[in-house]
Every structure is written in structure tokens, then in C-alpha cells.
Amino acid sequence: MATIKIKQIKSRIGAPATQKRTLDALGLTKLNHVVEVEDTPTMRGMVQKVHHLVTIVD
View 1 (spheres, rainbow, N blue to C red):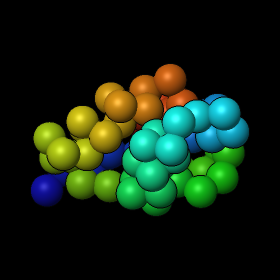
View 2: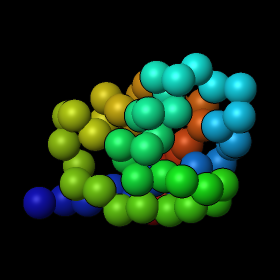
View 3: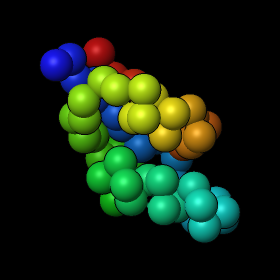
């Protein structure tokens, strides 16, 4: 299956607890951390929830 690379570009400090848990579920722990996850509707929804903290890398 296809994968997407997600990079955390902004700090989680000051974000609501639900967004912090979403970052944890995506595997993002630090600033500028990049993870590769499967491109599923579930993962896309999680990225959409924290779209202001992350970016999709090509």
C-alpha cells in the first residue's frame, strides 16, 4: 500500500490534549521529526486534525 511522510513543523506546546494524543498516535515526538505511515483514510483524518502542526513531505 502507498505511504506518506509526515513532518512535525510546529511545537505541540499549547496545543489541546486531543491534538497532542493525535501527534503521539502518528508517531511524532519532536519538532522536525519525520515518520512514514500508510496512506489510509484514518491517517489522512489524523493529519487533517493537526494540519497546522504538520506537513506532508514528498
